[in-house]
Structures are given as C-alpha cells and as structure tokens.
Image 1 (cartoon, rainbow, N blue to C red):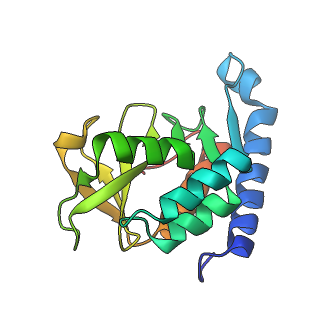
Image 2: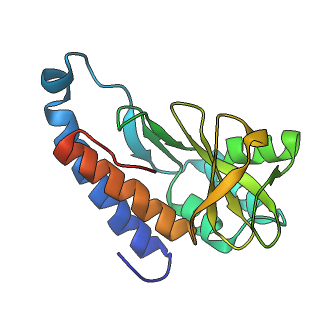
Length: 174
C-alpha cells in the first residue's frame, strides 16, 4: 500500500479495513463472549467536511491530514486490541483551538495536533510535516515519540493492526 495519499488510496485502505472488520465481527461474540461495540470507518458528513476545511486553514495541518478528512469522517475501532479512535475533524479542531498544539520531542517544528487515541488514553499527534507521534502515557505532558514519518504510514499501521487482530486476536504494537 505504498504511494501518495489520495482519495483512491484511502478508498482502497477503507475497503481493506472494512473487510478485516467484517471478518472480525462475524465471530466476535462467539470468540469473546460479549457483543462487539462500534467498529467502523465512517464517511464524512457535511459538518465533517466543513470542519476539515477549517482545519486545513490551521498552520500546523499537513496536506495529508486534509486529504484524509475529505474522504474519512472518523474511524472507531472499539474492539481492536485496546481500541483505536481516529477523531473526527471537528473534535481535532475543537481540541486544537481550546488547548493549542501539543509539544513534540524531536519534531522539526516541535508542535503537533492530536488526531487519534487508543482506549487507554494514549494520544497520537501529527506534526506540520505529517509525521505521527505517540504519547508515552495518557497525558500530553508525558512527551511524544515519533511512530511514523507520514499520515499514510500511520493509516497503514492501523490497517495492519485491524487485519492482524481479525486473524490472530492480537493487534501488535501501535
């Protein structure tokens, strides 16, 4: 799944994530003994597109994040590992405006925008160049370490985690 982040790439990414989720959900309750929560890649609505346009005007927003939000409204993976959430553009924008950018260790700009989290409160922030960083603990003050060099690589890591979880019950490390 290499190449440039585009609507076509995101469409293929979504199809692969949706297929893995379908596999996972078909036996989830039987395997784990309780019904699954929400596990979906949601299309953007009018409010999402409006928020994405506003987010695009923010200085720290990389072009790939704007491309993502033009095609994807939100990703909720409540039952994949400890859960993963790629926040909707409106929430990202609200947090950025209320709390400002988060400090990133080792990034060229050293400021980032929180775009995702897991079920344990770990946050993922993107810097102005598009690299994604993971918080060391469930706090923006804990510091962040670079996870991937681009939004596209981060999305591919999410995709691989969903596929691995559907196949083995273990998402791996993200």
